[in-house]
Image 1 (cartoon, rainbow, N blue to C red):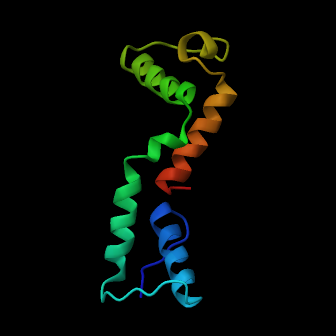
Image 2: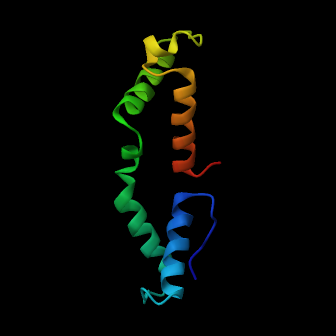
Length: 103
């Protein structure tokens, strides 16, 4: 049986595989089905940042850069320093949290 916890990407992949196997669409023949999940997850892991648009990706880099250099930001500074508004950065944050699976 595949280890399932529906709060992260790994578990979502496991659930889909279980559903596909239950419906007869696929047959998992290994004694260690979590290896299948791990292989799928590692193959898409490198593409995880593709969930962010270019502007979002560069805003994350700008945020890290600002923090490293001790830049103090208020809400009005976000578009000029980071490249996105504070509200847009909240959306990016939610995407990253969902991707990581730590809701």
